[in-house]
Length: 46
Image 1 (cartoon, rainbow, N blue to C red):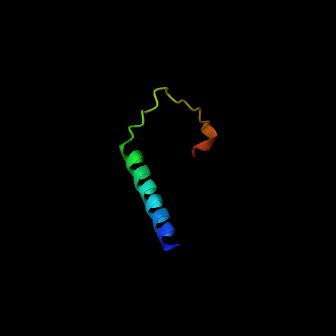
Image 2 (image 1 turned 90 degrees about the horizontal axis):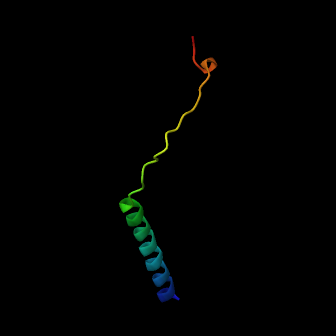
Image 3 (image 1 turned 90 degrees about the vertical axis):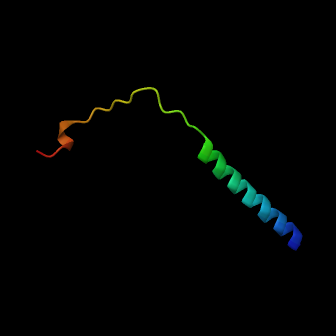
């Protein structure tokens, strides 16, 4: 039983480390479409 739990822990740790490395090295492209939002003048103090 101890051997199985050790293998599961090692696989879980390897998955977490692999996921962290993937997210750290993934070059996500910046959004290319402009974003425009209309804000009414009522939201600003006078």
